[in-house]
Image (tube, rainbow, N blue to C red; front, side, top):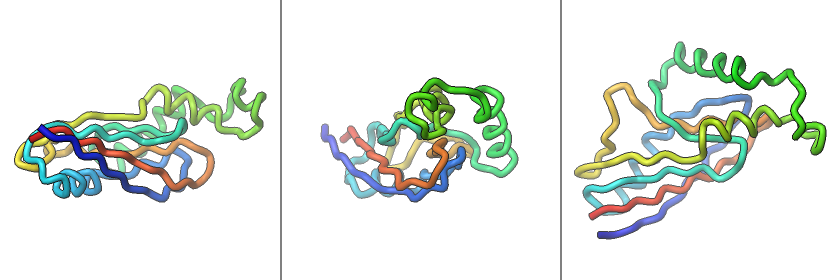
Length: 139
């Protein structure tokens, strides 16, 4: 049994940008030299999250619109009143999505569905460089 930790960064535009990071996570598993186990993907920061979905234009638009219905940008947030940075909605969205995801792998291949990709969702109201950690546990 072994544990390997890796990192990579992604430049984002913010504004609920959804970025496919599946290949970057798969590369971390390949470099770990572990055959089977689990990989936990974690994004540092309180205005981004990680999940899986089918990364296709229609669904990306659907998800962006769903976030707008759940946590609209154009309503008052106490965070904005306190800090004045205008990204209260981004913090709420990220808290609901969550910062991490655990995916099993076997023979160094992620056990994702055919149409399932790992995505980073950056909700913030400005571009950022996001750091993603991948902790791989396996043998």
